[in-house]
Length: 136
Image (tube, rainbow, N blue to C red):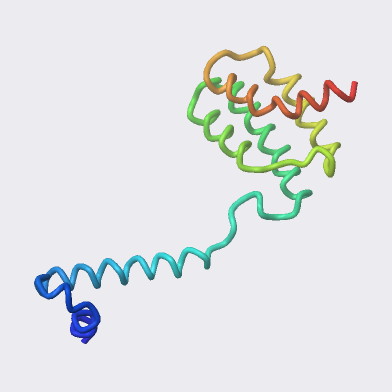
């Protein structure tokens, strides 16, 4: 039925075979289903309130420090780094948590490890360290 409607709507495509129309219909239906389902999911991390994100970021830096203590460039450290990156923090709204993150970084991570994860953590900490140095 849909095939005949499509052929009637697009008479210039008479040279397409029935198999081509079936594939075209299937692809369009799949794209519409994906587009419809795309807006129905739960929002990822970072969509909650800023206080919850700040607390989650503090927990993430603690897990990162523990993972780097075991193996600085290991899979656990990389996963912990990704978890740390997911959560945003607003230093203006959550100065206590921002200071706690900087303190944990300075005591447990900064200058103790070498490698890719350590470099990436330093880059991630840049804005927080800049703010912490400016307030001193």
